[in-house]
Each structure stands twice: as C-alpha cells, then as structure tokens.
Length: 250
Ligand code: 13P
Image (tube, rainbow, N blue to C red; front, top):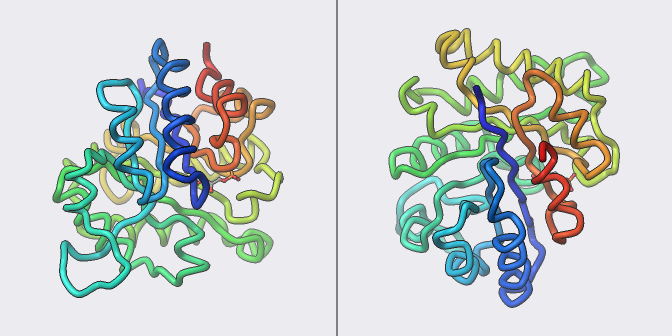
C-alpha cells in the first residue's frame, strides 16, 4: 500500500519571516495527519523552516541543488549544505528548472545520484509541454525523462525516489489534467519503472501529480489508482488552500 504523499513547493515565494509563520501554522494544523507531508521553501528560508518543522510530521525539502558536492560554482547550493541544515528531500528536474534554466536530463541525473548518495529523498519531476502533448508525445517524453533521470540508479535506491508527474501546461495555469488523463500518464510511468526495474519496484514507487491541484479537484485526482500524492505549487502558499489538500483523505 503506497502512503499518500502531499508536498508543497513554495517556489520563489515567502521571505524567511513569512515562511516561518506559514510553516508554524502547518505544523500545528497538520500534527494529526498520517499522510507523508513535505514543504520545500526557497534556499534562504530553509534554516528558519528547519527549526519550525523539526520533530514534526512535516519533512523539509529543497527545490534544487548543484550537480557536484562543492567547489567553484558561484550561485549554486551543495547537497552538503542542505544536509547540514536538516533537509531530507530535494525536488529535482522541475519543469521551471528544465525550461527556464536549461537543465538537461543528464544534469538532473547527476543531481539525482548525488542526492541519493547522501541519503536525501528525491522528487524527480517529469512532464510534457503542450506542444508535446498535442503531438501525441506525452508518454514518450515522460518515459525518456524517467529513463535518463534514473540512469544508473539501483533498484535498491528507488526507496529514495518519488516521481512527480507535472504536465508543463498545467503548472500555474489553472488548467488541470483531467483525472483520467493524469491517470493514463501515471500508469505509463509506472509501467516504465517496471520495464527499467521490476514489477515490485513499480508497485512500490510513489507517483505524485502536480499542476493546478486545489481543494476542489484534489479528491478526484487522488482517487485514481496510480496517483499517490500531489506536488502543490500555488495552493501550498496559505494554510486555507493547503490544508484541504493535505487532508484530502480525512
Ligand atoms: P501549481 O500547483 O501552482 O500549478 O504548481 C505545480 C508545481 O509546479 C509544483 O511543483
């Protein structure tokens, strides 16, 4: 049985003081949740939020990290720095990193392996653009991103990996994939994991959906057999919007 996993990607929102207030509110209001929960504030908020979520049922995530451990990489953030702050997971390959900042599957794969080597969980984001979807290539794109992103990752290390399917056209647009469209890709992604690894690995891996998830559509999306959780952007920025999502099964 896969445990529902709801994660908030705060993206480039919230100052450290604002993040502290939001995190404290969530810790307080979600303390009875049995779902797996995570918040991913920006780098500048991690230290503050780490103090707030410490000892709670909310995991601390980062939104990105460098491909290498340390050195002359101005502006980058190291896995060692994240670990030292108490970060437990990292979002990698988000479409905004791929499309705005030119991250390639090869770079993302380096990051995935480095994070796992340091015992961080990874939320590996995959998803097609609208042009790719309209060209009938959604499954191919996701399959390639999975194959490249997970290259040389051992089956035993998949316990560190969550896949987040985020169709690019649904992110921040208010356009959600229909539950059936999302389910179709989730099923295809799970089959890809079975091809790359095994049926057992495919059965165990958590696959989140992301893209305009809100309180009104969360239940139907999470009701799909291969959707195991959500990676939430805009609706993770206030308790009013996030709590009904985090508590979708309550
Ligand atoms: P929205 O929920 O704002 O569409 O963002 C989804 C997302 O990109 C989460 O990583």
